[in-house]
Every structure is written in C-alpha cells, then in structure tokens.
Image (cartoon, rainbow, N blue to C red; front, side, top):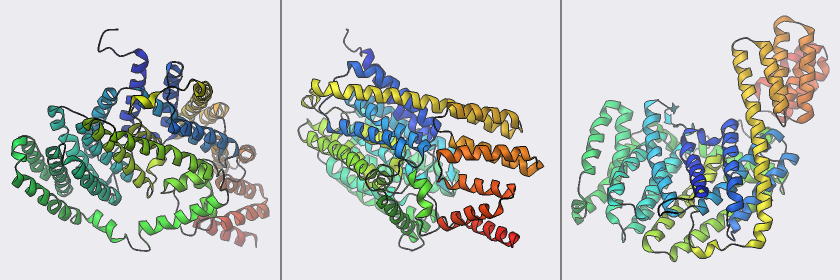
Length: 586
C-alpha cells in the first residue's frame, strides 16, 4: 500500500466516529428516540464490520462498558417502563463501539476530526444566534438545552488547547482563535452559572500547563475569550453594537506573536481580562437574577437538592438493580416532596442508580476511573506535545464529569459518548497488546449485542415513522388514516403500550365529540392493552378512570382517581377533577 493511504477498515471507523462527533451538536445530542435509534443502527453496523478485524487491548474500560450494555439489556425485562428501557439500552450499547473506534484510529486522524468539530461548535453559535434559538432569553443552540450547550462550547475551547498542545501548526493554531472567540460568546449567551465557573477554572489550569510550553497561545486565547464575552454583551444590547467588537477581534488576530511576547503586554492582558469580563457578567440581568437565587430556598440550586433527595429515596427502594431507564421519569410522583417534574435527575450518579442500581453505578465508576487514571498516567510517559494533548483531553473529561454532578448533561447519549471518545485515544503501544483468550469471549458478546441493537433500533425507527405519519394525519383531520398508521406502528413496536394509549385517548375524544358508544368500547379495549404492558403507568390509569366514568361505573372511576391523587399529590388538576366528580355523585 502506498504511503499516506488509509486502510478501508480504518476509514469506516473514522467516518462513523467523525459523523457521531460532528452531527451531535446539530441533532439535539441524540436524546430523542428517532435520532438515538438512527445513531445506534449506524454505529452498530460499522462496529460489526470492524469487529472481526480488530485487535482489542486488555482494557478495563472496554469490559466495563460491555457490562453496562448487558445490565441495561437486562433492565428491559425487569424495568418499570419497558419502552423507555429500550432507549436506555441503545444509549449504553453505543458506548462500546464508539470507545473501540476511538482507541483504534491514529492520533492524527482523531485530531483531524476534533479540528473539524471545534469549528462546527463555533459555527453553531453563529447559526443558533442568527436563527434565534433562545429559550427564556438563554441561547440553547441546536442541542435545545442551554446548560448542555454551554458545556459543549466549553469543551470546544478546551479541545482547541489540546489540538495546539498536540502540535497543530502555527497557522492552524492562529485560526483556532475564531472558535474560541465564538464559543466564549456563546457561553455568555447561555447564562450557565456552572459553566462560567468551569470556564474560569479551565483557564487557570491551562495557564499553569501552558506557561512552559506555549504561553503565547494562552494569552491570545484568554484575550479573545474575554473579547467574545464582550461581543455577546454588546449583542445583548443591540446586534449592531457587536460589529465593533468583531472588528477589534479581527485586528487582534493580526497582532504578531512577537508583540504578545513582551512582558508588559502579557501582564496587561492578564490584568485586563477579568476586569473586562466581570462587569459584563454583572451587567446581564439574566445572569444576575440566576446568581441572586443561588442561596435561596426557592432557587434552582435548592430545588435540585430537593429532587436529588427524592431520587435517593427512589433508589433505596431498588438499590441493587434499579428501576430501569425511565424509572425516575415515571415514578418520581410517588416520592415528590415539592411541586416539580424532571425527566432526568440533575446528577449522573443518582440517574444511573435509579436506572440500574448500585451495580450499574459501580460498573460506570470503574469505566470512568480507569479511563482517567490511564490517561493521566500515560501522559507522564509521553513526549511533550503528546503529553500536553493527553493531559488537556483528560481535563476536558473532568469538566464534563464535574458538570454532570449538578446537571443531567451525561443523560444525553451524545455527551456520554463524547466523554469516552475524548479519553480513549491510543496512548502507548504497550497498552494495545492483544489478548487472544479474552477476545474469544468478548467478541461474540459484542457481536450479539451489536446485532441486537440493530434489530431493536430498526424496529423503533419504523414504528416511529408510522407514528409521525399518524401525527400528520391527525393534524389534517384524517382520523381513519391515523388509526391505521397507529396500528402499523404498534405492530412494529416491541412494547406498544404508548401507542395503545394514544389510540385509547383518540377514541375517547371521538366519543366525547359525538357520543357514539362504539368509540368508547374501542377506547376501553386499547386502554386495557396499554395497562397490560405497563399496569402502574399513571396516565394510562387516568385514562382508565375517564373511560369508566363515561361507561357509568362512576364509583370505580373515583376510586382509581382517588388513588392517583393520593400517590401524585402535586398534580393539582386531578385533585380538582376528583372534587368535582365526588360532588356530582353526592
């Protein structure tokens, strides 16, 4: 093979890994079912092609990720919400292939992917701002979640430093100031308090790591990050006011390194950056309001402590294996001590423990701990530029982990995959020794898991397409077509309780509209099907209560509704409905 050509196997790994990394910011982090299923099919197909030719190392993280996939697969059977458990399995099953791909491709290739990615993260700030992707005044980007988007932008800044430390050319390093400038401005617009603190901590750590190897890059980057924040402040006042700041940034990029190397200039930049940034932060009403509630009992921080306590109570009822993915979202009503609802716990350890118990928590702890320890230890044995690149990548992993302790960032499959990809680049030849005996065990398991993932994800994609078509039919008032499409969706879905419930509510609405008893009979049948799959689902039980009321079995309807109100005391409309119905039968 001629020098410079890449084997086809490696090209597939690079392509799939690059696609996952670069598309995540624009596909909402694969957190929604259809995006997750498409990603799982693509990754698993590539993995099954890659697997027979791969030479995997003795790697504790790899085996831990496989064990995590197995326990999530088991949770499909014992979990509280079987349909949600399927999504949990798909998210866990993607980690092993992604980690294997990242361990197998060369450092040069992975750095090329990261170079494209840091530019795309910067571009996403421009596109998100231009398309006004704001929620309640906070920039959410295409991730559709402000805090998640903020940590993504911070990782983008850190990876610029990693690429520079890894030996990026002077020309490329200078152009990396553009994504740093854009990412810092984007972080300001997200108004994320935690990420602001992590941004400051990152630049402090990077200062000490860069002062001996490349201090000029740090000074230039810190100045441009401060200027990016200033540009975002100006944009907050008026988009036109951001133009002068952009011009100043462009002129600053033309300043030669020789000028920045002067001691007086560097001291001025070091002193001016915080003095410039802090007033900008305090001048933002949204940020000031969020910080003002930090210590309040009604503030966001205290509320998170409340439902962290409730999640701990849920975990204690199934401490070994948990309730499966979706357990917290469906069962939190029984444990609520305040009026709130969250699809995910704002804490990775608690989220994992509610899903797969202490066993799952122990497995992922082993995977992450080994990932970080191996990275930091390997950095000590490397040459200067490789050591710096590895150390900064490990810092990026740590920032993701710290953020996940106070937010549900790593509940996004994209961010969890990103954590293991960033920390998984090949470190040293000795680590890549093959173990033929273990390969005979783990490869069949990995192949079976990959095949199962493809089957499950493919069925979910087909089912989801039928359901989306049904949504369009309902919107166009083609109700008969909608029912047929929902039936097709149910036939291809592995657990069809959600679809049965949709049909039940659709027929119940038709009965309420025209009083035809046949609609009510079909609604009852569909509701019974949904309850047979998931008997404790509160919304299915509420529909059951409504159907019984319309059938004339008012006493039984009230008994079910009373139990629902007792178990879910913060759903005020149910309590009001119960009072009205009790008054009617007296």
